[in-house]
Length: 80
Image (cartoon, helix red, strand yellow):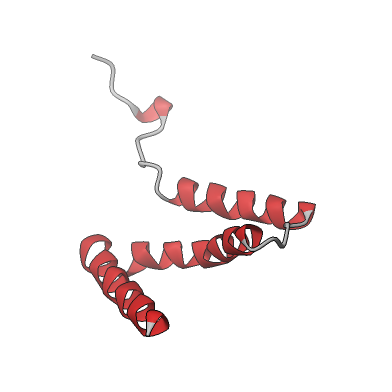
C-alpha cells in the first residue's frame, strides 16, 4: 500500500511540475532521478564510489546551469 501511495504522489507532483514549468523544463529534472537514488542507497548503507559522487555533482551542476537566467552579453549592452 505504501508503494502505491508513493507512486500516486510522485505522479501527481510530476504533473503539477509539468503544469507549472512546462514539459521541456520539467524534463531536465528527470536527470535528478539518478542522484536521488544515489542518496537513498547511501541512507541504506551502500556508500557511493568516488566516480558516482563526481557524476552526481556533474548532474546537479548541469541542472543548475540549465536554469540560470539568460542575459545579454556584456558587449551588447547599451550605455546609459
